[in-house]
Image (cartoon, rainbow over the protein chains, first blue to last red):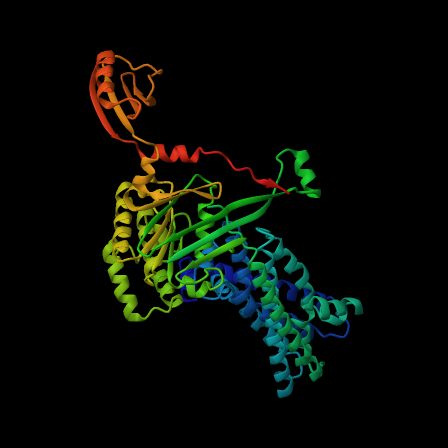
Length: 249
Length: 330
């Protein structure tokens, strides 16, 4: 990590610009939400601050998952295509861990800044939750990070076979975009899809609902499903690694 | 130290056409082709040996090297290296080996090599004392003390390659794989790298080298394995390899009269250097040197002459041109 930070500092202006652009980019959807509410429309059953809380939790989760885990998708994409993934396999450490480290991206910490600002703003408009809600939220937030981690494993793993396809980022953006909105605005069928099939709803909607006192302790089943997803992701990634063919020498 | 038995690697690749019709056709159906990159090779390498893997592009050298380093899983066959199976006991194994790839850098482009060395210290869990001792020794041997703190992107290719060697040797490996370690280097840099390899080899570090630079082979390797079409076609010493062409020598001649293209039996024109200067190959078992010199002097008038052992390139060219093993379509 120290080396990665040193690498970033070699191009300080690029680093600062990247962080600023990420902050601005992450605030686009909340600003649109603000405009929607200012124009008199709303997400049914959700106040502006409650809707913004869901988006804040989503950005915060990405602010942790992206610098630490999602960089491995980009490094797998380029290193498998170029054959330089060989160099990670020559290190006496777990390959997945090395892949994550080489993808560590401090730029993405910018998302933590935008997420924190948004979170603080959203909290000003809701009733301060009690201790139990904070405990429930913290546990569900861990599950949210775990789900994002498993997604990075699936996306990265597929690149050992689907060599050089940068479409994986588009797939993630297209699917995860639904997670920025309160789940109840979607149809029941779609809600089930986002809970049990593509667990996008578990990234922000469920933890934010817990903080708002809308979820009972039963929602903690998410922890078990997040753990199962991580386990599945690890098995999948390691199986896909065996498909690595390197590049011509 | 290394025991390889019937090692094979097959993989499948898609055949793609280049015309618009073929490109559209491949959207629906892509014929697959089985490539046998390495075909049942077996060999042994002892500790302290310096072995060169040679072969034309696509012969299977790098694939073999990648299986020996544990990077690739073989399709079949066995390898025991340092008492371990490289791809099964990868972490334990790679801790004891080093690798330098002439075309893949282990350094980090934007930061100085010293930071990358420090990263390797952490990855290999090298103690502070061992790290300081080894680094001092390697820096001294390779004379890179003044470049270690410059960003890698500002280093010359020769300086970078020396630092690549430090990266590979910091954890004191017993076995080192070198994949074209002198590619693109000037003569001075090549000599520095070669002398470093020789000094490490004297300390019983085993080196396995793949290269297209036959000077590397002549100056470094004691044993040569030629791989072609995935099979070992020669496993011999360098002298043994030369003797495979029989009693042939290279003769460079400057004459008063031009030497014609058609020559008597036992002679072959290798190169026409100038109107009155040629390089010939002479098979002394068919035409002895003494009659050759007297005949040529009489016919063309010898002004200058140099006789040398046939260059290793000529031997390699003949081996590379051996018959092609077809790939199987599925």
